[in-house]
Image (cartoon, rainbow, N blue to C red; front, top):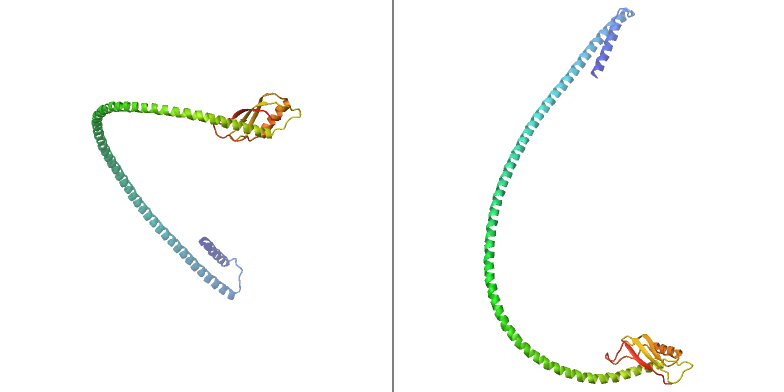
Length: 287
């Protein structure tokens, strides 16, 4: 901007000088005087303006230099302040590092001392514990020996007492067993006779139910019979039927097998002693 202003003013001066040169066309005298005056006035104004601009630019430069110097001084002060702060922080860090090292060294020494004391204490406790165990073992051996002697004596007395009691129980059990055997024999004799009677009635009921479900074949002859084996469950349901011996024809044999199947479930057994899973009976129809 300053260079542009200077250039502009120089251009004006050159124009004025050119106007004042001898080659300039002559003008009437009256006008010539006025032109010269005007030129002189303009050059003075231009010079003043030029000086004004130069001073303004110089002032501006002076202000910029002063501001720059001030900024440099401030920056220098800031740098010095930062260096001092860094130095202070460095010293603090070093001091803290030294303090920590001393603290760590102190703690290690304390830990070493405590560890040594603890090891010594543990060794003493171990020795005391071993001594206590030795004493307990001695006392336990004495007590064990005493108890063994008492147990042996007690065992002898107990065995003698148990032998006498066992002999009494044996004799009582023998007497009781004889009574039970006699009672069981009488019961079995009675039950056998009753069960035999019940079994006869049970088979008769089965035969009758089979006969009800039986259809005689066309060529039936009186006196035919079949020995039947029936496999049943506890509810009388027929599981399997087999004919062992039949005196009649094959057609008669088949009618008997069908009749037994149709008779399922068979009559219920009067008791468990009479019930048989595989029951044999003779089917002889009354024709």
